[in-house]
Length: 475
Image: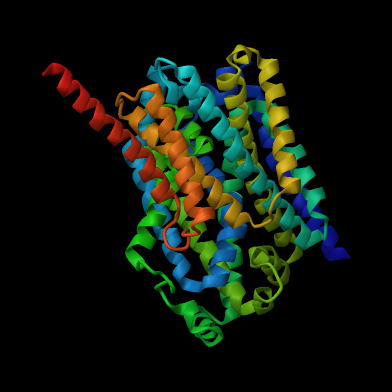
């Protein structure tokens, strides 16, 4: 009982610290929609980096990635490496230009950027806004589920109670200072993420007897766990690995991360933020991988009838003193909540700025839009699937396939007509969903690759026929 009280007190204290940072950020806010959505484009690179890292990982890292490593072993390293390569390339090649072009075109939201002075741009704004609300809303719901699962392990709370608590905290974040509150709280919880993961990893490996002993014990459980090459890949390793590189590159379709590049104080600071973010992300990702592998040795029963996605909170509860269990739990919960509030705010912006632009200049209506989106996300979380890894990767691929190809063309300032833009978004999402749910080929190649390829193919086919038509007219 004493341990539970210590855990609860530590959890509450650290959570209160993070929430108070969000509330304090309100002292810096301006009552304008641009400040609420983009923090007046004044965010420094350190905050941008830590925020992008934590909001991009969160539930996927603490639960999904740990559970994935627990189930398939060391071959899960290719997800980490491939994703990191793709993410780095996207930031390096496109995000500096995104910052410049978004400011030059006065684009405050991702949908606004995609529409970009196009004839019929209202349809681009509406369709992309609907895509953002549908899939980013589902993504946000998965974060509420992830935070609730962590609370269930330690306190035994009903999943629904944790989801409702998370939604309440999200409202506090969003109402206190908009995207500035998100970024500040993300940075704090990013530091907590790094520290808590490294602590648990060190203790877990020590309890396994060191790296060599861990490797030996994994091999004794199942030789596949120490096989670097994933098994059962009909097309071989290369297409599988390229699929995860494209998954990381799919960050170009994730509005909650794109707005951080749009909000940084200068395009010249994007690469600095990228280097900080990459170092932090690799630290947390490899820590999560190690924790998943250690959990397979120390908590073998989770594979039979348990939930491998709960390996991290179970392991923390098993190995760490109560004080640090509370810290770890606060890190997991805050990470998921800060990601959820980033996504909810992007959905709110899509609703009030893009789908119903008549509300765009009303600060009160923007906040009401945020409340409405939170209620929708809460409903999805209460009714949805509890597999965090699948929920997140599916939503990520749909957004990457639907928005990513068009965003790349806009960043490069290539001309795209409204019909072609709408077709690119529709075909990209349809192909991604069919690949995953109809053909069930995601284990062979992650669906972001065929989805994004299909969207770009639509553009090139349209360009080919347009060029051919223009040539015939000239003759």
